[in-house]
Structures are given as C-alpha cells and as structure tokens.
Length: 355
Image (cartoon, rainbow, N blue to C red):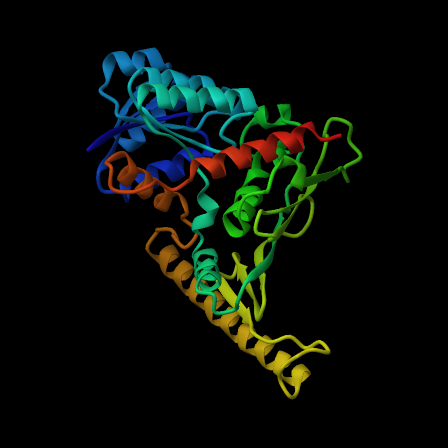
C-alpha cells in the first residue's frame, strides 16, 4: 500500500484525493500546504494528518508517494526534495517552468531510482481513447494529420487557480496550454525536431500585462504526419480532436463524449455514387449519436443530483493515478511516457519564449 501525501491544496487537489480513493494500492495519509488553516481544514475533512512544510512531513510520516499540486514555479524544487526524501512524485502540469528545471528533475529521479511523472490527464477522455483505437486499427488507412482545437471561455487576467498564475506569460490561460499540446503529441506522435515546430501567439486582450491569450502550434513527425494545435481563450468553449486518414475522418468531441466517423468524402474524387447524399447520411447518423450521449450525460447528472453525488464522466485523474500506481509496483509502464513529457515541456517553453 503506497502511503501518499498531497502537497498544495488548491482546486486540483480534490481530483487527486478522489483518484486515490478509487485506486487500489494507494492511501492518502497526509496533506501539506503553506497555509496552516487550509491544511488543517482539508486534513479534518479527509481524515488525514496536516503539515505546513515538507521537512515536517518526512520527519513525522512514512511517505511512499507525493502528489505535487503546488504552483508551477515550485514544482521542480518540491518534487526534487521529495525524491531525495525517498518518495516517488506525481507532478501536476505544467511539469516545470523551464527546460533546466525539467532536466534537473529527470536527472534526480534517475539518480535515486524513483519515478517522477507528470499528470497528462486529458488523454484519458473516453472519446479520445476510442478515436485513437479506431485510427490505430488502420480501418481508415494511413494517418495523415491531426487537428486539436481547445477553446476556453475564460479570461487570462482572471485567476481561477490562484493569483500565482498571473506571473505566467499567458496568465490563467498560460497555465492550461499544455493540455492541447500533449493531446496533440499523443495523437500524432512527436516532432521530427525542434526545427519542425512552428509557434504563433496572439493577444486579443490588448492588455500589456498579458503576453498572449491564444496560440497556434504546428509540427510534422518523422513519418510525415502533420499536427496543428489551436488554443484560444475568451471564446466559446470547445475541445475536439480530429484525425485525417486515407479513407475517412474521425472526430473525438469531448463535451458531448462522442466519436464521430466520416468514412467518405464528398469532393470530386468521392468513391460513392451520390457523395452529397452520403455525406448528409453520415452527418445525421453522427448527430443522432451526439443526441444520445448528451441525453445519457444529463440523466446521470440528474441522478447524481438526487443522490447528492457527482458525475464522473470527466474524471480523467483516476486513470492517471491507477496507471502510475501500477508502474511504481512494477506492473505497468505508467500514464505518461517520458518523451511525451519532454516534448510537452519543450513546446511549452518555446511558446513562452516566442516573440
């Protein structure tokens, strides 16, 4: 049983606690936060011990695993201290603020022989997993491209995670940009090199305190798959991944929890007799699937409301935590490949350094 502590008790800590509760082989035993009142309140609520610094935690507790949920600027220091104290670490995204910090974290983990893993949770949305399985089956032939569209209806100047996000170049928006980046990497593969990556930033706020509130990232892989990633704030929300292959398109739509399939085109080279009619058929068929999924989600929400519970359809932290427990125990490879973590950090830092 992995005796586990959560360091940093902001909003995301609740998802980690929920995931630990649902994961055999792990048990939350302690929480740490620099705000003593917050630490005590959460500890009382969750039935664990509370601490205000890591030295006290490791002096007073037997800890096998630490979940680092502190502001990104502290991730490397906190995680490295935990590794030196003998605990594996699971670090919230973005894993580190700089390339040097990432290198130091990885080097430390290897030196002490412990695991240091970053939370890339949004690759565990059910429709995304189904879409990737369809593409991997080669049912639609060779993959040519991937389009990731992550649109947020938040303002980068309004901190939802805490005032610390305002120190980031993209503010609140800049904290979350790694999500579509790692989703793109998991979908298309890794860039052929840093020179194969193109980054553009925009700032529609006209506020000099914000360096960007939108990004466009594109790259190609060694196997000539292209990936485009659009992420914008101050727009109506959307999370969607579209795969383009020889013989069709597959769309994973996160809000509706659906996978839409378009096996035929309607251009001049369409292989069906009535391409426009066929396209209309698939559009209607996919729309019906969306309607069924939305109805199911609403029904589950209504039932959860009656039972004072919650809907877990969007719980993507539990799969991360379960896979990492298995990896620590030697029965799995973990939720996030190191190369994916490395490339995500590379592109994240490239975005923040772009001019």
